[in-house]
Amino acid sequence: MEIIIKRYLLYTIAIFFLSSGVSLSILADFGVSPVSALGYALSLVTGFSVGLMTFVTNIVYLLFQDLLNKSIDIRENIIQLIMSVLFGLFVNLTLDGFRIILPEEPGIFLRAVFLTSSLFIIALGLFFLFTSKLPVLPYDGLIAALNQSLSWNMGRAKVTGDLTNVSVAAALCLVFLHHLGSIGIGTLISAVFIGKILGLLMKKFRHRIIDWIEKKRVEKAEGMSAGNR
Image (cartoon, rainbow, N blue to C red; front, side):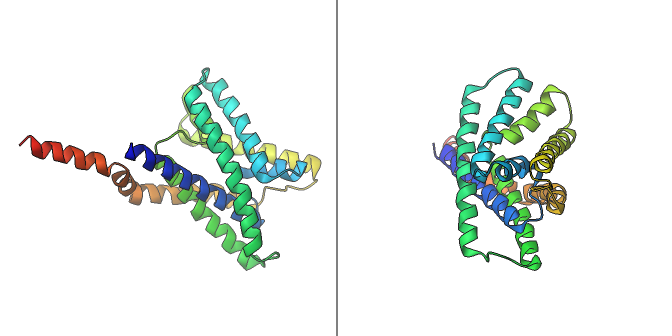
């Protein structure tokens, strides 16, 4: 039971970090990450909150995920939907919070700091998310579905998903706003560096988090082993 609680705690922390990173990238105004591009573009076009439009896009990702998998895992879908709601709420909360405590019109240097910080915060959120070993958010589930159903490697599936997301977001902004809106140099920087930072975190710290999650199980196994001697 303790292990399950730790996994869900880590998962919730991951969602908070991811939403905080997305909010900072929005405030940086250099263009958001490919994963967030469509939700933010819909927010700019419709005027609805970023969190709500992020939830809407997650439903779309979940539908395509199920179509590609040609099956519906009810338990996993429910968890993904719940976490999508939580993610959307956290995006709105962190965005509003940052707007209160950070300068209204930051200069280019401060915007660069926001963007750089968002890279590390999003990577840290993804690190916690993947290490929790719980169902991922719908976008990552869609990438996994592309990988499995089309027999693509993860790299090709990720690039295809990101390019599609960015292209649709850019098209929406160009048609309705007459500018790229959510897409910019920050989108490219995010696409390149978040994965690299995540790789370093996974390599150096993943085993420590797993040890923390499974500590009780390890101690119990050691105790049983000692008792059998």
